[in-house]
Length: 406
Image 1 (tube, one colour):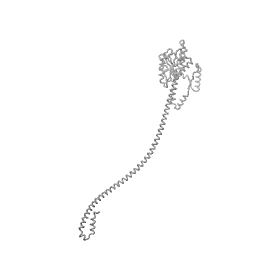
Image 2 (tube, rainbow, N blue to C red):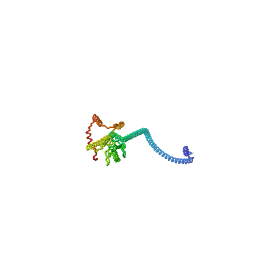
Image 3 (tube, rainbow, N blue to C red):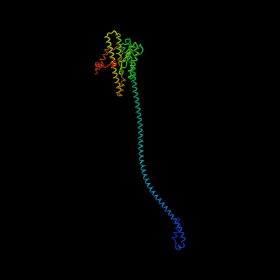
Image 4 (cartoon, one colour):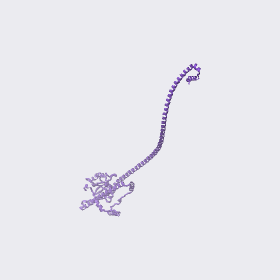
């Protein structure tokens, strides 16, 4: 504050100024007044500067105040925002904790679901494997059953030829008919007999499998091929095909007539009456010398034998068809477990027809005795045996087709 020293000295001098000093020292005071005036000018200038500075300071202070107020308001707003954000943060934190808990629960559920899914897949895989194995075993059983059935059929068809041969030999032995083991003409028929120095060809024919739909066509083809026997001069122009009784239901034609020969379709059961009819021809070798009455009697007997043979074929065909339908119905309608038991019992059963072990004819009284015994047993069981009605019914049944003209 050295710049105010002159003003201070001036004021100090004026305060202590005496009378004489006012008279003789005024010049010094004037100098001091000049110096003081200068200082006052500088002071005024300084004051103006200070006023400016003060105004600037006040302005700055006002601005600072406003800024402070603004900052305070901003601070309050920020504080409120901070509180809101803090509350929102806590809310989000709570939601995060809840979501984390839910995530843990869902993760545990997912693990449990995956374990259940894995167990279910394993169980499904085991069930699928078991079903496939059961299906495979079922198919194998069906295939094996079909194979066994085909083998049985093949065995039955292959045994048919041997059965026919044994039956013809037994009938020939029983009725003293010449059975020819080796024929003296071309060809190798299954069986041949000699009647009146002529050879009668009897061939066994059977289907090759279970399907008998093409059996009639096969018989027609074989009947046409039988010309190789019929054209031989020593062979009788009547040729016989012996078929299984079970195939009669599939046949609609039993006689194939050609220009030079005829083929007859018969079953094993009809062999004996047919061979007896043929033997009757041998007994009447000299038929030209017979009287008309004897010829009529012979023709009547042969006609009745032929009629009875054809009726027997017709009846056998009917019952064969009924038995086949019943067998198919049993396989289709019976429960599987019962059908399996039935098949087991069927395999254990064995039917052995009586075999011919004696070398003599069967007397008619013995046959009549057996028939009487059967009739008495049927009557005791309440079975009606009205042979007259049965005969009338068979007589009314047509034996030939209208288009045959027979």
